[in-house]
Image (cartoon, rainbow, N blue to C red; front, top):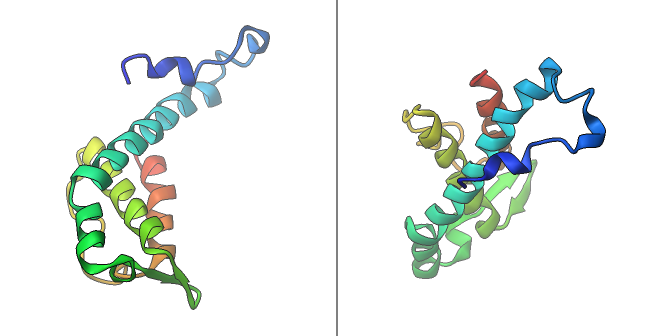
Length: 120
């Protein structure tokens, strides 16, 4: 995490692209997504998601997308990822709370995609 900037730096052969505005804008977003993945993995393991699945079964965490059932492990990770994004950006307004997104994997994916873009 401390040396995360290494993962978003371009190699020397791309020296012309290094100072473009697109690359400068993409770096913080990529760092946010990488750190959110790390925090989501910690949340999944230690934040109660894994324990909830072990207690209630994987089926209790399943969501649906266009009539197809999404595995509970994937759904739980995506919920943890969304919460990590909002935690890291300081927008703790319950992005995965009750409502239209409850049990809908597609809505979670939309939040995952557009939350970092909204931080620009």
